[in-house]
Image 1 (cartoon, one colour):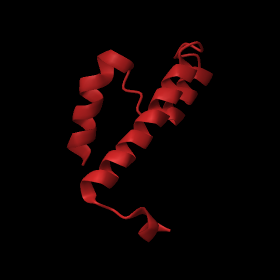
Image 2 (cartoon, rainbow, N blue to C red):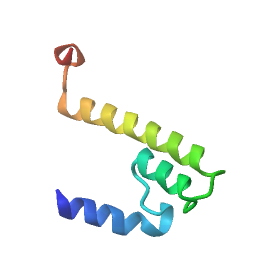
Image 3 (cartoon, rainbow, N blue to C red):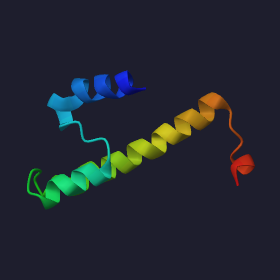
Image 4 (cartoon, rainbow, N blue to C red):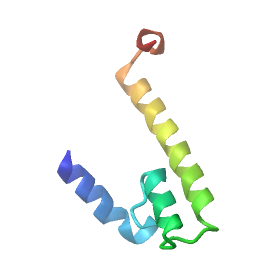
Length: 69
């Protein structure tokens, strides 16, 4: 798991600064290490990505959503 995270961050660092979590983007923006104009775009993209990843896993693993609730 750790190596997967390392590879993911290393491979995407040049593209997006390896922002995979909206909390990281928010903190970077608060401390002025990330442009305020781009923060909403990144956060929306991250949330959409998380929903799509969850949907993909649900389809691949055949999880019945009713069994989760």
